[in-house]
Structure formats: structure tokens, C-alpha cells
Image (cartoon, rainbow, N blue to C red; front, side, top):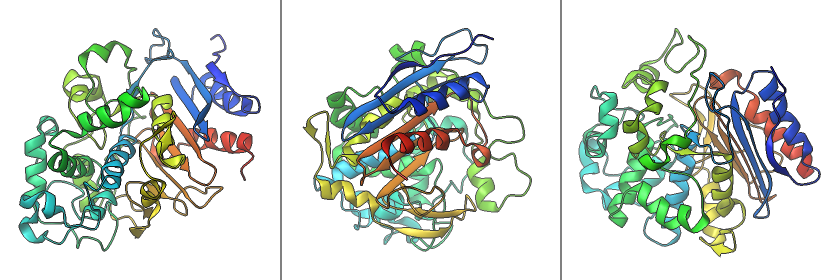
Length: 380
């Protein structure tokens, strides 16, 4: 097989990032991928390479996009932070202030901050739902509004893998009268020229790379021992990677897992947070509004993931799973490997987006990209 070269550009000094991406593309760890790094609001690395399909018939090109699973959550969180900065959402307010039906079953004191920090006790649906129900916004949200929490809200983190997007998205819909995908597009994506979608128009389908599922036996819900909460998250409904190739999945607004974009769009969107509210010369938020994301909401062993977690408003915080060079940093990743790192001290973002999925516990590709970027940035 011929050597695969990464396309795009790196600023002087950032060659190690390109070397890591090319090594992954050539040793088979990646089929196709993109990497982007920004510093002080400027894009210093924008790379892509490999193939958009497992058969290696379609090259991964500059405008290739792909489903990024839970990296979508950071885009949803950014949209909520923007609205909070404008005074439309108060994270300390009860969810029921905006969404009265949500008060059912003892949830009248659950705060918006609990939704943002995976501590609302609504990590899945009590009722059995189908994958088609994920495409029915009203059904997905009304079931959550009606149900009782799995644990006392605010007392522990428990990853809301699919539900978080519907919960935060419905608060956004109640305060704006628009869907999360529409608010993100109008307020952030269009002004930034960011190629990211929560609800992909059919006109963009031809640009989407095919996700390559994880090795059999390593995917979500395929491990032997599972708690009730873990099983509920993994099997109600089950995760079927091939579903991401359907028009139904792509077109639906699934704000915790259904976003479509590339590393450039992910990194350049989060410049807003890394750069004190300013991106591409436009002020989107106040610096104080950006720093709200860093406020620790809950910490401890995550009841669903089973690992130590520290959640701010919509992001994992430094001091958790990933060692960061600087304390005012946050991150999240998507099932299979995509990753976004935001460092407010160094004013940097680092994004990695790919199509070959690897079990989260053993995947070092995104972290390898980050270490090369940190080296290039002169960070620890």
C-alpha cells in the first residue's frame, strides 16, 4: 500500500502533529481522519487524509465530514452557554421554570446545571424505546419529562449518553422557540462559516465519511458485566453504527450523538470558549460567560461509565481522565475516538475526528495528536 500523506497545512513548529496523523494513517490505526489546532483564535494546523470508506475507494478530502457521536455534546453545551450569557437561561434555575412538564415525578428542583453536568439522574429512558423514537423529538423529551430520576439529582455524575442532548435541547427550544440545530446554525455555525450540523441537510450527504465500527466484542454494550444503569444506556435503544449512514439519523437532531462535522469545524467553533468569547473577529460571548463552563458541578465515580469524572457545564474538566498542561482546560470525546480539547490558559483548541472507531478504553490516537500539539505549542 502506498504511503498516505496528510493534506492541508501546519505552521512552522507544528510538524510533529502532521507526523502523528500520517503515522496513524499508514499503520492502519486510522482509515481517514482530520486534525485541527488553533492558538489565540488562529488556525495553526488544518490536516486531513486517508479514506472516507473502509474499502478505501473514496479519499478523505478537505470538506469531508463525519458523525462525531458525543463530541456533538460540546456543540450543544456551547449553544446553551451562549444563551445563558445573553440571560435567556439561568443554569441555577429549576428546569421546570422553562419546561413546566419536567417537574413531574419529583423533579421540580432539578436544575439546568444538573442537565449540563450529567447529574440529573436521567441517564436513559425508563420506558422501552426504539431507535426510531430517537427521531421523534416530542416523544423522546416527553418521556424524560414524565419519568422519575434513577438517582437523586445533583448527588453523583452518571453519563447521559443519549438523553443529555434532548434535555438541554428542549430547554433551548423552550427559551428560543427554535430547535437546537437551528439555534446553533443561526447563532454560531453560519456567522463562523463552521461546517458542523446538528441535523444534516440531505444536500450534504455526499460528503459524509462512513464510520467503521469497532472490533466485534469491544463496542458499547458488548462487555460482559454491566450494571443496570450501564445496560439501560447501552441497550435502550442499542447503538447501531450502521444507522449513521441513514438519512433518518443524519437528518434528525440528536444533540448528544448525531452531529456531523470535521476537526476544522469542531476546533474553530470552540475558539469562542478558548479565546474569551471572540472567534474570527466577532464577539459571541463575554469572557465570564465562557468561563462558566469551567465551574465544577459534580465529581466522583461516574455511575454509568464507572470511571472518575469531573464535570463542569457541558464539559469534562482537567483533573479527570486526561492530564492537561494547564488547569483551566476542558474536553470531551465521541464514541469511537473523536476528541476536542479546549485550554483557556493557552487559548488553544485541539480537535481530532476520524472514521475508524476504536473501543474508548484502548484508544490513544486523539491523545497522541494532543501530545504532539502540546509539544509544538511549548506546553508541558
